[in-house]
Image (cartoon, rainbow, N blue to C red; front, side, top):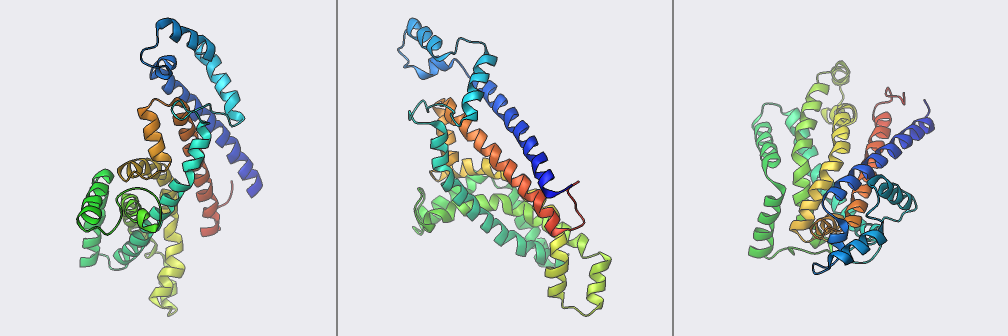
Length: 307
């Protein structure tokens, strides 16, 4: 199968996934309560609520409402925000760069910590460093992300006054949220890279490379690390969804104006169109990330084909 045929097949699957996600989100938001009651003031009369419900089409069967919603969504119209009275998708896209900025910075932190720890732990398996790295990784996996964020704010921002505790501006505003979200992903990458690299270092081609007199650094970074990175790349693709969930918590703790904070505010305000727009954008991000990971496989291991 050629790469173009593979991409077409994956795009067809992506359309089905997005349709499924949109249906699930629509039904769940429908079950949260009467949208007419949520949109109108608390002092609205029963007659006003009923008139509004008929005008907005909320009195129609749910499948008709979904088809109407889907028809607008295909055109990029997910409705107006109930709170901001602006297009819901525009509000989400407006916050998109901030979330991507935070996610990229968190990936840099996670990889900058986990890759060296994973490599050294695998090479020095059973050493004191390996034991310490294992303890650090387990502690990192166990620490709740919101707790770590609050501790960083109290220590670094409040007590030491080194970095701002909230908002978005320069790099200094990004440091604490990136560390918090990066520490959420880093420990798992460390453990997985260590385990994978230990298995690869036992392979025959590694022994052959060493017998040729190649430097240990060349053996590890040029021959072993490339194959050991395949399961790590897989987990990174799967971690995109977890990272988006972590970014919601991180952005809330640090009042960082990204999509996650917008989603939390929308859920609190029962702003249905914004929640729906946010979920669809996240679904597209996860699908794109998984497709990118699949394409990277053939680069890292030419034996993998698009079949």
